[in-house]
Image (cartoon, rainbow, N blue to C red; front, side, top):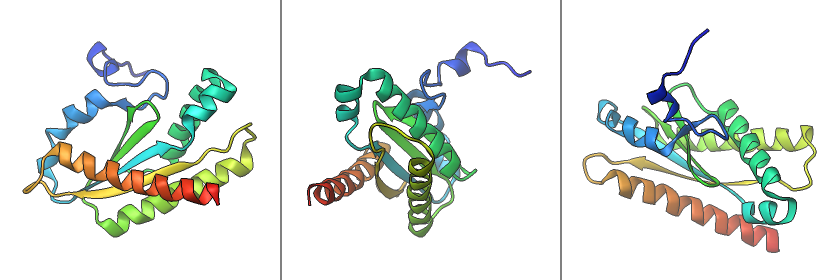
Length: 164
């Protein structure tokens, strides 16, 4: 049986079991070992509605379900993080924009499969935005901001679709 030491435990999100934001910044020190890093920012759509309507335990269950879906969707050469609240981040090493698009399609397929297999009083959906990290010309913060902006563009499209 393996054990987690105190330091490693501090890098885990206690709800989802995923790595947390502190671990992301710890691992970011190694990003310069890779030539092509990309990332996907993932946000749970209507998460506040889930919490407000069905309670925080339902919101917690939704986050756990999202974590499971993302674990099934992530490639081996990647780092999955619970970034904040209902946001997750997937960092993919040695990748391309086309590969990031394929990973996002895989995430959407896994969500669709989840919805067919599991009955919840809410519909689980995600907004996804991706970006490549230009290590020579941008900071880590600007890389994260690009992903975040792309995710918010996708969220706006999703919400417009829902209102139509």
